[in-house]
Image (tube, rainbow, N blue to C red; front, side, top):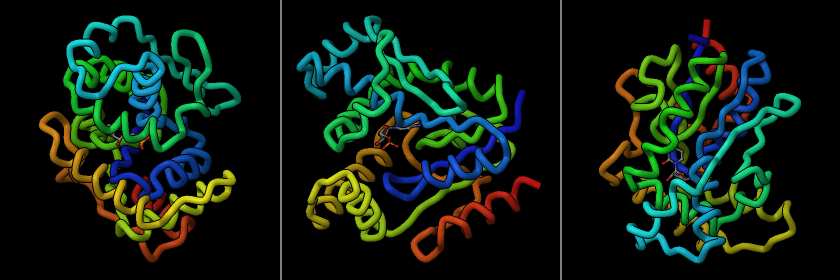
Amino acid sequence: MGYQIAIDGPAGAGKSTIAKEVARRKGYIYVDTGALYRGIAYFLLERGIKADEQEKIIEVLPDIQIEIRYEKRKQEVYLNGNRITHKIRTEEVGNMASKVSSLKAVRDKLLQMQRDLGNSFDVVMDGRDIGTNVLKDANVKIFLTASSRTRAMRRMNQLKRRGLNPSIDEIERDIIIRDKQDSTREIAPLKQAEDAIRIDSSNLSIREVVNRILKECK
Ligand code: C5P
């Protein structure tokens, strides 16, 4: 088993930025598990299947092959052989992912794959249920959070850099809806593991958070 650093937390808390940097500093692999749920969501949206069409979703799940490949140490996501790494980074896909990730069949499909990655490499893995479920014995568990307003501001800046012009209130509303969906679902809800260290990043720089986590890894 490799060294495992689990980072969980709500949408927009800065998990991926922080996890990537921790992975770089340690020379570990970064596993973005949200991308797997997004991959499934992307497939369903392409097929015109709605989030509440449970039976249809379960029926098509075997047709979905999600794969993570590391190219130049960067995570690339493949759906049935096609690279979709960038196509899954939209709000539409994120919201769909949040909805369908509550289905047991969807979570079961992705669980083993995440565990295999955690057992094969030294990893920094981020998601919602890594410390509580996927890598229950992780060496270090972090629960990274920030206020909904801070998270909305960060998302807005990200989207602006991509040339979009979103409204902060709308983004914050979406974030609150997503938090609620993720933390109230029955299976593997978003919650802090008992042995996780809670870090509120609202008033911390990326560097401060990264250093704090690196200190825990000693
Ligand atoms: O982190 P990201 O925004 O890419 O995740 C998209 C959605 O996937 C989340 O809102 C959550 O519902 C789901 N997810 C999950 N378990 C994980 C990672 C993501 O349920 N480990």
